[in-house]
Every structure is written in structure tokens, then in C-alpha cells.
Image (tube, rainbow, N blue to C red; front, top):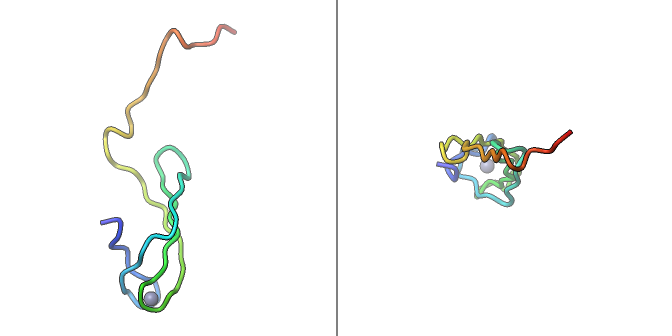
Length: 64
Ligand SMILES: [Zn+2]
């Protein structure tokens, strides 16, 4: 699925060069077309429920 994003120019398959977290739920990926070598970036939102789990510890709250 993540590998299947087509090249904007020739619609061929792209490969991932680099993956970074843009924020907690969005991945920023640098991609390169396997055919024409065109490079582009994508933002991919994480939709796995596990990724949205909030770790909230009352004992860790700062007294202000
Ligand atoms: Zn291409």
C-alpha cells in the first residue's frame, strides 16, 4: 500500500528513499520513481488505532 504510490509523471511504481515523522500521525516520505527517477514527497497519515493510543500518566503531571 505504502509502496504503491505512483509516480506523478509516468504513473510507475515509486520506491521510498527516506521516511520522517512530520508529526505524531503523519509520515513524510521522499520517493523516487523506479522508471523515470523523478523524485517527490508524500505525506502519509497513520491510521492504525494503536498509533492513536494516548499515554497519559496522572503522576507525571507537573505541578504549576
Ligand atoms: Zn516516473
